Image (cartoon, rainbow, N blue to C red; front, side, top):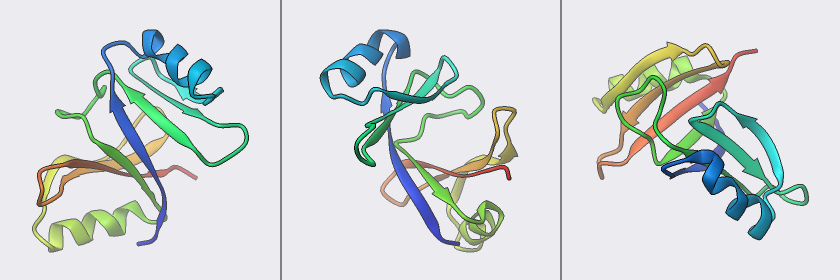
Length: 117
C-alpha cells in the first residue's frame, strides 16, 4: 500500500455555513466536491486543501483525516493482520470511493480510501 494523499477532516455543524470562512478568508476557493455533509475546498494555487464534515453519511463515527491509498483492499487486509480496530468495514460507497475506517492506537479514527477507477 502506498499513501497518495492525506486530507484533514474538520468537524463543522453545517458545511454550507462554514464554507465562507474557508473559501473567502483562507482562499480555498476551489470546491472539489460537496455531498452536503462533506465538502472539499482547495487552493487554486497550491496543494492546500481541507474537508469539512458535519457527520459521516454511512460510518458510525467521523474521522479526523482521510488517507487516500493506491490499494485500499491491501490496506484493509494489513490493518486486520495487525489487529487494529475496524470502525467501519471496507465498503464501496455510492459517491465513488471504496473505504474503511480504522482506529489508530491513539484513538483517532482514520478514513482510508481509494477512488474507484
